[in-house]
Length: 313
Image (cartoon, rainbow, N blue to C red; front, side):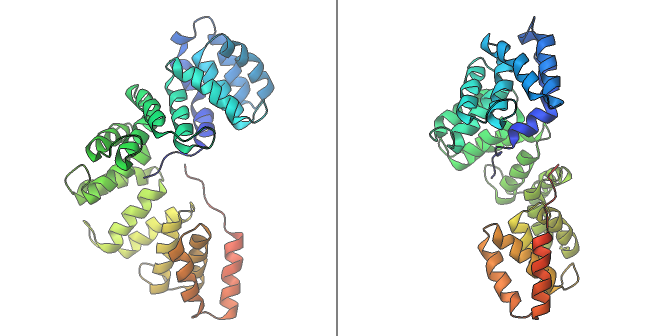
C-alpha cells in the first residue's frame, strides 16, 4: 500500500484551509477574524502577511494557527524552509488535539526524514487523528496494521480502518480495500467487491486503482476479459507516471492487444517505466529495441524526452 507523501501538506492547505478554519472557530474564539485574514493572505500568496498574522496566535497556543505555521515552515513560504521548526509547531498543535497536525506529525515519524523513524509514535498520532474521523489518518493507520509497522500485523483491523476512510470518499483507502478483497486479506476473497472498490478510486483518478483494475480486465479476473478497457486504464495511470502501468501498457503495444501494435510507443513506455526504477521496464526496453530500426529508436527517445506526466486530481 501507499502512504501520503510530503506534498500532502500543500495539497491539504491550498484546498482546505478555509474549511479548517470554519470548522474550528469554536477553538479560536476571539481570534477568528485574524486567523481568517491570515489564511486569506496565504491563499493570495502574501506569505509575509500571513506569517505576521498567524505567528502571534500560534505563540498564544492556538492549535489551528500552530498547524498553519508548521505548514509554512515545511514549505518555506513566508519563512525560511525549516522542517525541524515545522516539526515543533506540528507537535504543539498535535498535543492540543488538532487532527491535521497529528496526521502530519505521524507522517514525519513514519518517514523518518526529519526525526528518527519511529513507527510506534507514528501509529499513536495516526490513531488519534483517525479516531477524530480524519480519512487520511484512517487510511494510513490501516496501512500500519496491514504492514505490521509499530504494531502486530492485523489484516482485519487494516480492513476496518480502510473501510472507514473509503466510505468518506478517500481514494487511496478505496484502492487499498480493493486489494484486500482481491487477495482475501482480512476479508473473504471477493473479486466483485475488489472491482467495486477499485472503481470508486478510479473515478477519482487514483493511478494504483487504475492499474489494478486494468490488470483484472486484462486477465479476466472476476470480470469479462477486455484488453481494450485494460489499455484505457493502464494509459490513465501511465500518464500520471505510474511505472507498473507504463510497463503493462508497453506490453500491450508489443502484442497489439487492446491497442494497435506499435514498437515505438512500447519502447517509450518501457523506457519511462525503467527510468522510475521498475526493472521489468528496463528488461522489456532492451528486448523491444532488438526488433526496432535506428530511426524508430531515435523517435522513441525523443518522445521520452518530451513526455510530461499529468497531475493526479
